[in-house]
Image (tube, rainbow, N blue to C red; front, side, top):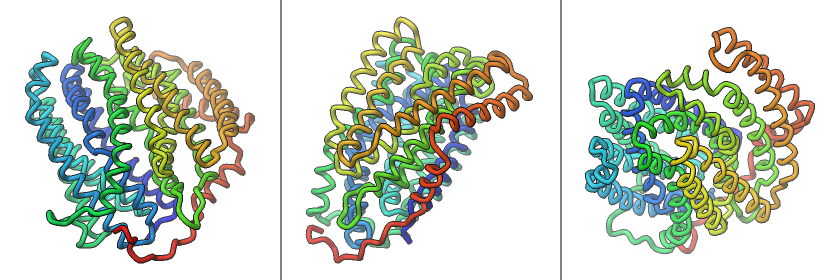
Length: 501
C-alpha cells in the first residue's frame, strides 16, 4: 500500500530516530572507551572508506529511485527498474569493497599509521552491506513504502551497536569497532533483501544472462551525472578528516570527528521530511510538483535548526564535556564553529533530493565541484595555522554555497518562493540570539542538572516568544504544512509495462 507524504515522513523520522539512538549510544561508548587516539584511528578508517562509498554507488541508487518515482503505480516497470539497478549496484559495490581490502596496507603506510590497516579492512567489508541497504532504502522511499526502511534500519543499528561494543570490550580496539560495523551492515543487508522480496516479489533478483535493455540504459545515463555529484559530495564530507589526519595525526582526527559524528544526527529531521516530500516533486503526467509543500517544509526546518543552534553557540563546553568526556576539550571549539553547518544541514537533504527527483541533476555539477574546491582550499590554508577548527570553518563556508545553490535551482525549475524563506530565516535567527542570551545567563562553563533543565526550558520559551513575534512561521502556516503532508495525491492509474522495458 502506497503511503501519503505524512506517513512517509513519519516513518522516515522513525527510521532516523532509531538510527540516531543507536549511533549516539555507539559513538558515546567508542569516544570514551577508545580515547582520542583510538577513536581517531577508527574515524580515519571511516573517512577513507566513506570517501569512495558514494562514488562507488556510481549514482545507481539515486538514478533508480528517480525513475521508480516517475513510474509509481506501474508495478511491472518499477520491479524491472529495481531489478536492473540492483544488478549494477551489486557488481560495483563488490569491486570497491575488495579493492579497499587489498589496498588497506598501502593506504595505512601512506599515512604512516600501520594500525590503520585492519580497521580499513573492517570498514571495507561494511561498505558492501551499506551499499545494499542504501539502494533498497532509496527505492522504498521512491515507491512510498518508507515503513519498510524502519525494519532495515533497526536491524542494522541493533546489530552494529551490539557487535561493536562486544568486540571493543574484548580488547579489539579500533579494529573491533570496524568489524562490528561490518557485522551490522551485513545483517542489515540481509534484512533489506528479505523486505525487498516482500515489496517487489520473487522476480526481484536478476539473472546473470538477463540483459539490461532500455531501462538499464536509462538508469546508467542519469547515474553518470549523479556519480560525479556523489563523488564530489563524498570528498566534501571527508576532506576535513583526511587533511587533518595527514597534517595533525589520528588523535586530532578523533577530537574533530567526535562532535561531527554527533552533529550528523541533527540532519535526520530534514532527511525524514525529504523522504516524504522529495519523491512528490517528480514531474509526471497529471501531477504537478509539490512546490508549496516543499516551501512550507523548508521554513519549518529553518525554525527547527535555529532552535538547535542556540545551545551549540551558548554551551559548547558543557555539551562536549557531558557527551564526549574531558579528553575532548578542544572539541568544544569545533562544535561552536559548526553552528552555520548545523543550521544548513537540516535543509540540505530536501534541497538536494528535490533537484534529483526533478531530473535536474546536471545543474548540480558546478555547485558540487565548487563546494569541494572551496572546502579543500580553506582546509589547506587554515588547518596548519589554527588546527582542527579550520576544518569546521571550511565546511561552514562550503555549505553556504551548497544549500543556497540547490535552492536556487529549485526556484528556477519549479518556482520555489525564496523571499518567505529568507523572512523566516531572519526571524528564526533573532529567536536563536534570544535563546542563546538566556542560556548564557545560566552560565557557560560548568552547569548543574538544575541549570541544564531550567536553562533549556527558559531558553526554549524565549525562542518561541521571539519566533512568534517575528512570525518566523505562523500557526496557520504550520497547520497548512501538516495538511499538505497529510493530503494524499490522486493515484496514478496502473499502466502496462512501459514500451522501453
